[in-house]
Length: 554
Image (cartoon, rainbow, N blue to C red; front, side, top):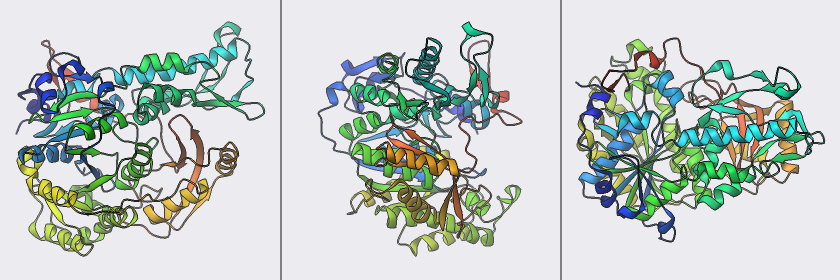
């Protein structure tokens, strides 16, 4: 079989104007980036009412075996199109760091991909460059303000704003800069985050329009004065220039799937440090144009889906109609203690031990959030009938159906069973609700998520975290939602605790305000905002020949 990139390179892509016409987008609203990519001027669409049903694709806690969440999202959209439904796909943009680090690409796989795959995985339309430039402009203006006399009285030991670059680079996590004498800046401890962990990314993804974007940028807290007063981007008069850098980046990007289904690929903040979803502007536009909108959230349902529902849907007034939880037999067996090398063999015992992870996510969607869901099993050839029957039986006990998904090998045709179940769910009544209300104290919101969503017993706080929570409450930020930064590999904050751990305590190590994004980031355990490259980076397999043909992306 061809590799993912070979399949993508042989795709029959339509001119982007034809794809736009399918989606009901007038040619005059397109800003072309070549033949098969375009940005959309959404201004003329702003007053249209939403008409579409929103379908969220999420997954169990990720494992080295893989789950195929993006692949399933693409295949489901293609399947709905095959059923003659008016559908739009909304995905997140891949980040260069993971592409060259551990993933090698993030545009789906097999015969369920968005294209042009190489462009999407690399520079695309320059959105991430604009985000990084805006982030670093703010950093430069902050340090210049201190150099030029520090009229605001910024305490250099209380600066919270970091620089960013879209590449996994552990060397930049913690640095000392401003060295070399008085004219080279003020020496201080500093550091870099990966671009997708920048608050600018979260701001871009949650902003409804350019005006809202600029207002959010103005509220960003960059540090504190000696008497603990917050210093914002507005204090530095930076928001106008930052918004100018982002004026095109905020416009959704239009591409297509291998089967020419229209797709809006826009935004992509880390799900364990930001809200981890497609942009509000893209999803909102899709809901105005299509009858069905398929979108995804980052990592497992405890992170991505929780933030999609408690942060994005709350902020944007969105009401999902159905949720798809993606799992694989292999991943469930891994959660049940089976070794990675043995996942291809039937093992009902390991599967039985791993199933509680899936069932917890199902319970969260149906009981915590009140939404109908279906479990999509991303099927592999060595999955046995007995293993699949066991999953069906356990899910049926919770009143949830299981649909087999074979979109990787068969494209949209392999997702028909899943699409039909999703259409059924979209026709059912539901009672969508949030896990917590905004008027509760920050600590109560945190503890609600830990107990209700993760299944933990309680929360402990470091001294610094407790002090910061008190300060944020005193600053009037207690009414914000909380954005939990936690390992994606476990329901707990310990990546080694697989399956469905119980009785655990989550330790909150650090808290900070993302006032521009509109939430409070709560860091638990050992969370990296700047990942490193693995021993064998995916970059070692990526190449380009003398004709400009790229290989090694997958």
